[in-house]
Structures are given as C-alpha cells and as structure tokens.
Length: 289
Image (cartoon, rainbow, N blue to C red; front, top):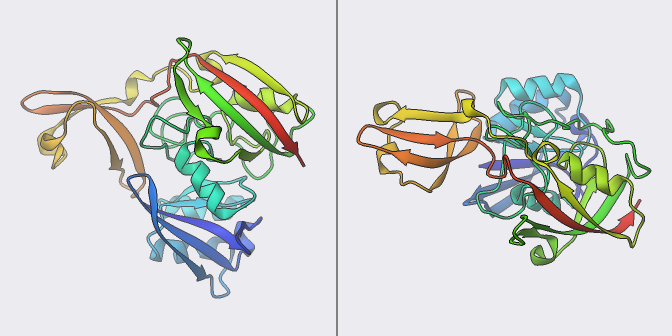
C-alpha cells in the first residue's frame, strides 16, 4: 500500500489542492518500509488525482479538501482521510494504528493487528463506519464539527488506554510511546471517544464506557462473504484466523478475516474486528489548542 500526505516542513499541509509536495509512504505488513518526498510540479486541485494515480497511491491523508478534488480521487480509486494536522509521520502512524479516520465514503483502512483501535467504526473493511461499504459514521473532514463540547473544532492531544469489559487491554497510547493528536469533532475518532474529549479540560482524566453504537457499531451480515476458490485465486492457501487484504475493482484495499474454509470455498468477514463490542477508555487530556 502507498500513502500520500500533503506535505510542508514535516507537517501535514492544510489544503490538498494547494500543496506543493507530497510525502509518499510505502507500507508492508502495516509498517512503513520506505518514504520519499515528491513535488507536484505546479499541478493542483483535481489535477493532483492524476499525479497520485501515476505514482500508484492508494490513500491520501490531508487537511482540508474540496469536493471536486475528492471526487477526482474517488474516480481514481484513491481513498481520502481528511482533517489531519500536525507531523506527517505521526499522521501516518495514527492511520496505521487505526486512530486516524477517513472523511468520506471512499476511505478504507484498518490496522492489521489488534492495536490502535480508537479511530474507526462499524461494518465493512474500511476506515470505518461507512467507508468503502461499511459506515464511516461521524466522518466529516474539512473541519466540519460533529460534537458540541467546548473543545469541538480544536486540536486535542490525549493519552488513552482502551480495555474490554473483562479488563483486557486492546490498545494504549502509552505503549505507542507518544500521545494521540487529533482535531476534535472532525470525524477522526469513534463518536463516543470524540464526544468525551470534547467536554474535558487539560490535565483532566476520565473513564468512559462505550456501547457498540458509540464505537464500532454492530456486525453487518452483508459484510460476510463465502467465496469459491475459483473466484479468488490463491484463496485455497488461506487459513482460518488469518487477516488479509483484498482489493476491489477500483484498486482500493480493505482487510478481511478468514473465518471458515471447506473443500471449495473460504468465508471472509470484512466487519471491523471491534464491531459489536463494548469498550472502555481511560483518557487523559494533555493539551488543547
């Protein structure tokens, strides 16, 4: 997978159509294996879709983006995660950890591991809650605020620890070695997490319990596919329990779990791994700006 980030002085540049550079990240097994900075050569707005398609980009991370550019990227099968700010490398890390959400129905991603589950949602292989064919509920991007607390529309820096009801930890920013930075209310986080942070004061710690409807939603039966080996070359080599990436007709990738296999077919589940689960978060708000 190749990710492109609008880029200036190591930061996510704020406007997709006016960026003069992209930083490209090649990702394998959910890890960045190489990077390169490339110029746009004077191209802008919708024309950048052709530039990125020529460079085989799968995902764009940016600040604001207009509808025309968004449509042009979608036509090229390039997924969009808007509303990002701060260091470009950190934004990509958040995306791969699953804590940076997409902003429209072309976004698609989730980490390959059990970590980094704060940003995402329900349904189908995506960035999650409506992206691809799941449900990016709450995704808005481009600064549109979806919560009403005092921190809505501001950049929030938090540490968090996520656990299941039995106390098992599934994610922690402390383990990642850095806090999470995001635009509160811009659809980058699951709804319940976003809402909690929107009402906090710097230095405050809270514990929140989220029902599935406030997090990754309920599993979607339509996201479970029984596929014949003949329709998916190589699927006969898959093993139950594996998590693999598939591509659609537009070249967009999405993760699926292998849940069953027989002599002729394999069952693939594109639901988010957190779908249907109640989640608990310990959140510490470090900074608001």
